[in-house]
Image 1 (cartoon, helix red, strand yellow):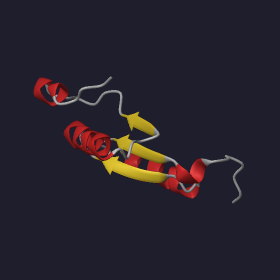
Image 2 (tube, one colour; image 1 turned 90 degrees about the vertical axis):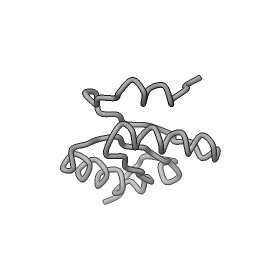
Image 3 (cartoon, rainbow, N blue to C red; image 1 turned 30 degrees about the vertical axis):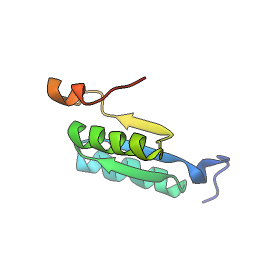
Length: 82
């Protein structure tokens, strides 16, 4: 299937989701567009991946975060957004 979404091949996306079926569906759709997907199955893992990306200067173009995802207060403290 041909897509007309220009410039998508270099996109790097972080998906933070704890539902395996949602992860599979979402990542499959993005991979069909040749978007690089990085999966985190918990808020804690998502923060860890984000902090690591920030330290390395290898930022994500987009982050898809489950709206109802629960983060503990100590996990939020480790994330310093500017």
